[in-house]
Length: 140
Ligand SMILES: CC(C)(COP(=O)(O)OP(=O)(O)OC[C@H]1O[C@@H](n2cnc3c(N)ncnc32)[C@H](O)[C@@H]1OP(=O)(O)O)[C@@H](O)C(=O)NCCC(=O)NCCS
Image (cartoon, rainbow, N blue to C red; front, top):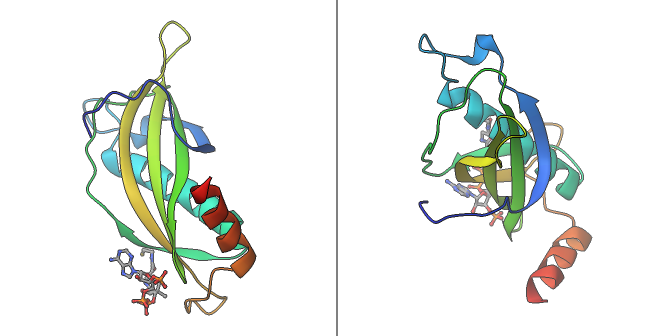
């Protein structure tokens, strides 16, 4: 968690602005709001990748490195780590670009796992073609 990342890794899946309603009494943004943005970003990537609905099954340990303030633009970057029969494991990084006077800073990262589900919410297989494409990209 403490290693220095010079730039974000993965695909930009979601970008948004922290608003006053997202803060605690001291003006910092709630950690839960940030986790929820990560969950949305991961779901967008997982659903595009698996060509259908996905549900979050797990979120691993997370550490918040710097506070986010109202007006900050946060960017969620998602990177596939593992594709199983029905599950997709993804690393999600959040970066804060406060203003153009300084480079973006990494706020947090976490590993989220999503399961592909059908319209009834039952797990479904990840389509073979996208899984093969992912495995091929890993072996390059
Ligand atoms: C998603 C759901 C349909 C999966 O059904 P399930 O019968 O529990 O599924 P399984 O135990 O067979 O696991 C499915 C996959 O998830 C993986 N998985 C299960 N528990 C996991 C965990 N704690 N962490 C990471 N992966 C996990 C399994 O390894 C399996 O992967 P694979 O098929 O790629 O090998 C079901 O758990 C569910 O509906 N959960 C609630 C989801 C939800 O509502 N999320 C939003 C939060 S409110």
